Every structure is written in structure tokens, then in C-alpha cells.
Length: 162
Image 1 (cartoon, rainbow, N blue to C red):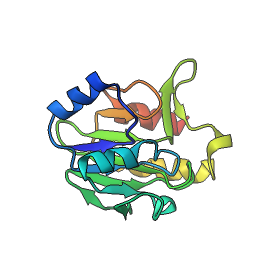
Image 2: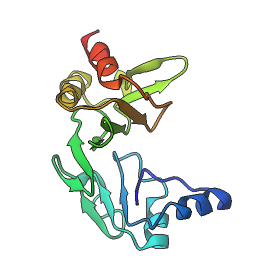
Image 3: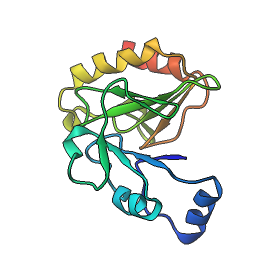
Image 4: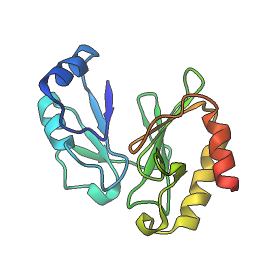
């Protein structure tokens, strides 16, 4: 079981997580999302895959890099977003993207880009996000906002073209 950008869970939810299987890897999608990764890594003796910006800050960590495979997940660097931003792609069942901060989907903004003030270079981020359109996916999960469960690739293409 791979967990992404973990946060502390109430005991009942921790039990639910453990019922899904053994946590054997942890992935951090950007330098701002370390959150409770060290606690999870200690609890489960699981390695942490981190952006290079976090290397050395978390125990048992390994650097993420573009193209890295972590189990079924493919790691994709998103330049220009938050420091150390990566997206994750899972190809099965129509394809799924998992985003850190580069894309958000919550009220009142809806599905949109990370605001310019939080980007290192928003134009570069948009160019990086365009690489995702080469992938086949129908869903996007977000660190910030509700998932898009159908036609996500088409919605991303429309957003990037606007």
C-alpha cells in the first residue's frame, strides 16, 4: 500500500487504513507536504519518496525524479509550481492523476491552477502540466479539493487552453 502526503488520522481512521493492507511506501508530492510522513514512516517502517528539496530532512527518504516508478505509480516533475512539485500517474482502470498543489478543485474557485502567488513560475507550470495531456486518464485526485471522476483529461485540456 502506498500512501501519499499523509496527515495524522484519528484512531478509527487509522484502523481503516490498516485494514487496506500493509503500508510499504510513502510519497510526498512537493516540499510543502511532508506533514506527518516521518510518523507514518516510523510506524510502518516504510521508506519515504521525497522531492530533492526535502532530502535529508526525513528519515529513510529517497529522491523523487521524473520518470521514477514507485510500484504502479509513475512520477512526473511539474516545474514552476510549488517547490519540488510532482504529479503521480496510475495507468489502470482508465488512468488516474494524483496532484499535489499545481491543480486545485474547491469552492469558490472550482477546477483551476495553483494561484500565481504560490508558484515559482506559473507559465513554466502550465508548460509542465501540458505534458500530462500525453497520458490516458479519466480521474484526477487533488491534495486540495474534490476529485474529478470522469473526463478529467478533457477538463484539464480545457483549463490549460483557457
